[in-house]
Image 1 (cartoon, rainbow, N blue to C red):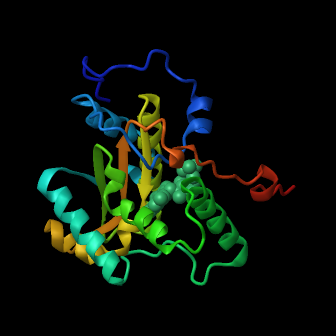
Image 2 (cartoon, rainbow, N blue to C red):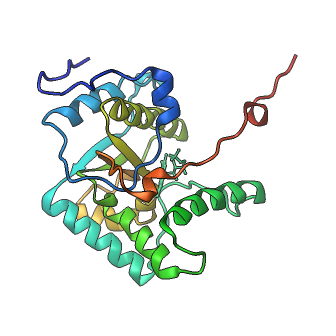
Image 3 (cartoon, rainbow, N blue to C red):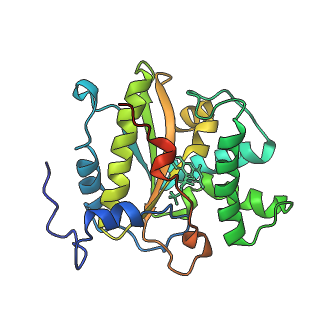
Length: 235
Ligand SMILES: Cc1cc2nc3c(=O)[nH]c(=O)nc-3n(C[C@H](O)[C@H](O)[C@H](O)COP(=O)(O)O)c2cc1C
């Protein structure tokens, strides 16, 4: 594994692993502070330590900067405002969403919009927040995650482990992150805007950076199932 470049600052005291697991939350507003040089590469090298079936290590991360990032965000925001729709490369949610899962989805949305003070019928406020997905929440680092279209669904699981590794590695360095599945709603537009090959599936975006400590949306807390709700013991 790559060793961290010497200029990568270690947090004053490394957090115990349990604190990383329990303390990670999606960060949706960032300060302008850039990442130290080399830190992103270091985090990705750590994330790649994730296990994967047959060690295929699926998935690619594209660090979007400058003109490429600006063009992509503009295209996505425009598509969203036009109400454009296109088929996704891979299906994420069950259709229709079973009521029990719908309740979790609504609770997570309520937690976010509640923190922002956006009422249920305040479409403008909710749309404004949704558009921020397409600007990678204005984070200093904007990543696009893609996968070879020939890979099976198991490889998405492998890539998910790599993504979680990235989030925890980032957090260990004092950074926040957020997965952005919303970007996968416009895979054709993403490929066209960035000139990507048709054979690459658009999985999601990731925002990374230092969390704005004042932002109400960063104080959002979501609930988790109790172990008894997802563990079955068979004797
Ligand atoms: C792959 C992935 C995609 C996500 N996409 C979005 C998104 O498009 N917009 C958003 O605001 N949050 C997104 N999230 C964040 C989830 O809503 C969040 O992880 C969940 O509500 C649990 O909250 P927590 O991360 O704060 O613990 C995504 C998370 C993951 C892992």
